[in-house]
Image 1 (tube, one colour):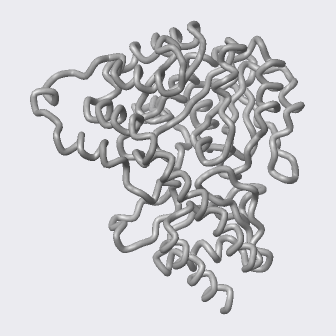
Image 2 (image 1 turned 135 degrees about the vertical axis):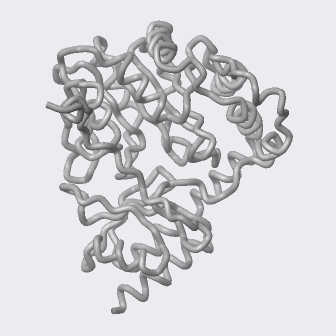
Length: 352
């Protein structure tokens, strides 16, 4: 028996491909915002003081936590900030899911959930979406040790109405229900207003999508006193200094620039709705999207061929070789100019 027998063996999360030179491709595979971050945040980046770099940042990211809490009208003591929503969610899995009962999440959803469950040895059960890729709220009326729902869901892009989300929370009072709202700003309805009614609810959001700051890794959660305490206990048992000084300062500047934030979202939604029409004209099935991406399938041409042919033309989209979704592509909504090139490439491929 050698040391290799003691190494952890796990199938990791596989992110979308990151081309070495993004200037030479159209990158529509990782749901990044195609527009730059707020100029106010960029100005902060250009004026960071060296004397702050040599010091440890505040362990509570207090300045950013206060700004986020104030913006959403939630008490700061009920706010948790982490290194992107992935860090927040991973911490939540450790802090909130400690039952022998399986946690529940959809069979088609964010593919990090089962990775964390495997990594932290949390029993889990996937709940099938219906034939239209929608969550069936009644399916979550079964014994469980916790529930995780991405809303709007990824990669399907479909939004679950808030009353259905509340149905799940209300009927699982003994379980923590995490609502992962990474894409909520593009047309979904947040569960934040339900926080005052349900102590078992956690809402998780991110700066990565709507605020164009995926590179700064800023995520946050809102929950009851008990849940936030458990989250902090886990955080301070792993790494006290999670948020770096530049991210805190730039995050505050970004959240204060609401005008730019809303204008950017409006541009993406407008481009998305145009893209739905353009793709349907080309015989694509397009699921109803409340996100900054589209989940599409062509009636004649296989998704894997489209994926490869687009990549050969320098256009990156996302494909999963998985049950139920193997013939779908996920396409990030880019700028109008980027989407125009996508349509032109699809016309060439479909004409072959």
